[in-house]
Image 1 (cartoon, each protein chain N blue to C red):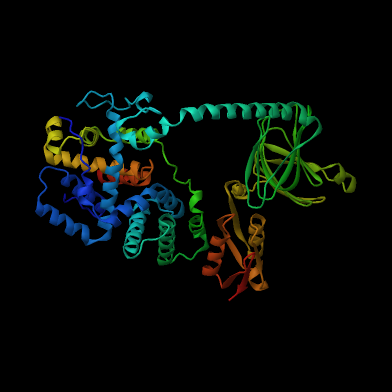
Image 2 (cartoon, rainbow over the protein chains, first blue to last red):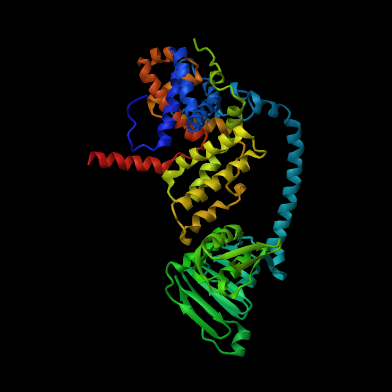
Length: 359
Length: 201
């Protein structure tokens, strides 16, 4: 072993290096009984030595497959880098190292393949027929409905190239005509990545609000008539729907990128430049919920949007505790664990509901 | 002259437990590494955490083999991180991001897919090509052509000691690809680069 054991190198790397060196020496031609005894002493000195040595041995064993690379290489010539044409990785043919799995499988396959092919072909035909129907016929008299269940986040690609991401417990209807791309947000929250089409505005109806865009990225969240709009890119117009305008006039509001608007009936609250808040409000698309110094009650309500196991707060005092952080929305356990360890809170799991109490 | 390589390693590990560890635990190194990278903020700590986890798993398995090795491995990982967080006295809720990631279902972290022989060979060839010339030549002669150390040294006109060093470095580099599922420990490499620079400066 070299004397290069400088303190900069972390202990695990030093052990890994020592393990690799033992291994290399063992495979030399000068390995003696004395060496073996020394090696065993080293190996037994610490479990860390042993596990690192096992990593080395396992790597070596697994790289045995490399021998298959020598197929077609003239003996005792070392092939150049990246000289491995695709023919080197034959699908069914037998190379030295493939005898364990690949070769056996491929021998019994061909007849089944043919049968499968027929089934695929039939399925594909039906799929094409359905697709033609959906594209050409269906939209004229029916909207497509997409929905997610509790805790689900799903992407939908539309025929115009737009993409929609549905958050938990969300339901939308999509209908396209020659002059409008219409989305009805029946409940929940969705993010829209809208493909540009000046001739057909993209309009999201959420309760008594309508949010209109040409080509932009934004999200709309609906809680009955409370609607929140977050604009990540471009510009949208937020206005009342026809019914809303009849009930109480509401001026249309333009929202630029970075804006967050919350509305309830005729009232609209706009934060024009929400900055970093935007990404956090949209973090659900990656499966996260984000809290910035909010009351525990709000955080719990947010978790309950995503999970069938509902959290209930029994003590009003703890409901007001302020929490922050970034959590995976379907992982209540992480959140609860933290509540227990960081706050005077006791968690009781009743099976279908989780009760939080003060301690 | 290209005699077949013996399965030399069998000579050195004979214990049933060692084989169990290689088969049931090391097989998940790629998933474990990804898990740690998500759960722990400092990427440079990951190899150290990993070693500690392996030690705990091995020592526990020496007493009694866990019935579900993969679940046990990740449970151990999780416990270790919780311990470390406590030790660092991090009670701030800002660290939730880390603890939160701990609870990601194990299977969510792209479950190990069984590679076909063909894919695996492709991966190995890519691993081989990443090595420096010296290491690559040595690995080729020793592992593929099965030459002895002496024969390989003669072919490459290198002293045996030097050859041993190349073999040692070559294996360590392969380790990241073979066990780590093709994810080299990038942050560590970067940190090293910086160290070197500061030494020069």
